[in-house]
Image (tube, rainbow, N blue to C red; front, side, top):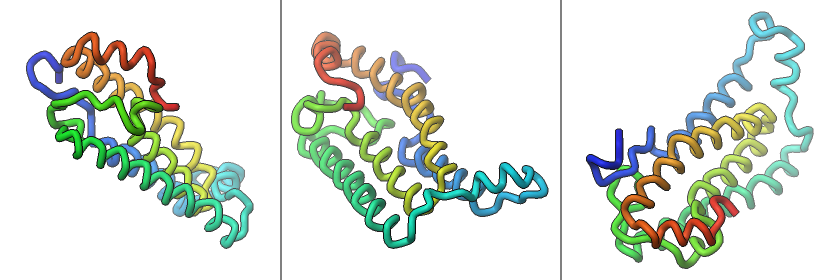
Length: 170
């Protein structure tokens, strides 16, 4: 899908589904890994968690989950106040450059990643946490880069100047 024919970035899937997909894939392997199939040593490593007690995991994970969701909500709320779509499969009508967007070009995806880390800790799964790396690769290559090409084509020099002064993540 190209941005030349349609007024959308052409991302491969809704970003929340990408994060949830990786999270669920990690959880399934973590919970249902069969030592006879994958080898006892690898199965042992996969079931190795963070070594935290349940209460400690809650204390660490809850602020990350809540913080990530609050970041997402604040960034999405800013889009709504501007009158432009939050969903990347809908046209952008305004360039968001203030609020959280002064510090990060992608605070929503950053919020998703923070929430994901909190959930991985809550699940006590190193494997789920490690799957954040390929998840972020997919988000970068097949969502963010497509959005950036779209925004550059749509908003031209204004977006290019914004991109030059604000980092992608932090």
